[in-house]
Length: 357
Ligand SMILES: Cc1cc2nc3c(=O)[nH]c(=O)nc-3n(C[C@H](O)[C@H](O)[C@H](O)COP(=O)(O)O)c2cc1C
Image (tube, rainbow, N blue to C red; front, side, top):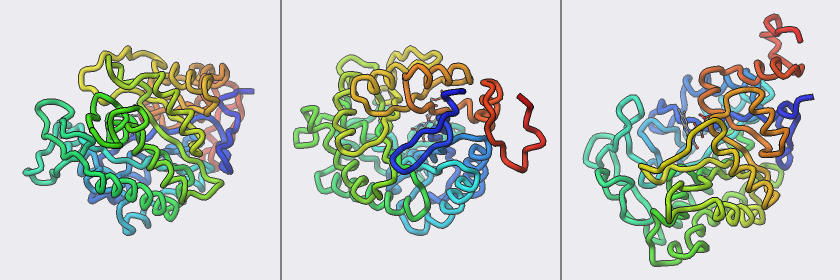
């Protein structure tokens, strides 16, 4: 029996296996609205057998978008099309998750195929970015506005409202995006937070915003629905956020009702030296799980069935998240089950194509 295809419970939600689609921006929305692209993209991966589909970084406010093409959930009008997506995902036996996000100083950029550079606030479709401190990500980018305490309160309120709309739209898993140099990560990393008030300085102060967002989110989530947090477990940079910080944070998040830590890395330093290779971030998921008992998700260059199976079987993580491999192969879970000799259900419509074991 394959461990990769064993079920996993997060509060009242049971995932049918351990393969999760990692959140991936599609840069294909208009004014935050989802459309047929998102339905087909996310829906295909549910047909493909993943247990949980985490929708791309979905902005809690317009200025929290990385690009003008990001999905959003800052107004009620966004909900009906998202409901169509979650209904379809559920009908395939998958669970619909959403990553709630604020891009902070890395907002207002062009999509990758338009060059990915910053759109100035004075250009069409650009806007003034915000951050813990008035320091740009790179020297050639516009300087962000340092959030006031009142504005920080609004960010927390935006995450809370976005969570309520997510429930309305039918999502059963909420993931907070606190990784990759976006707003929540910018606050807890000492490299981007040079505030002098209660949101800067000490470890406790730097994690304050994330904890406030976790509390506000957890407070409106029904008891049976899980809350996940994605962090960058290290900045890969001297003087930055470290794996030891992540372990300390994970223990605190566990006490606050967070159900799983999705362990990514990097993104807050433009020129960090990252030892990229197969499964290069798995060690962080393993360490957090071992040292805190908090369930973890492993992500990053997980590309084949045996590798994914080994991560789950050896107890390095509870879930594996796939991004690029799932773009190459939307049916990765169906193929992986066959490779591992495990009989799983295929969609009825595709039964005639199911290989015999
Ligand atoms: C097209 C694309 C879009 C992405 N968008 C997001 C995102 O919205 N939120 C996020 O946390 N990570 C995002 N990522 C990072 C992935 O979720 C994942 O962490 C990373 O690609 C490493 O996994 P992989 O080696 O399986 O691709 C994106 C990656 C890709 C390729």
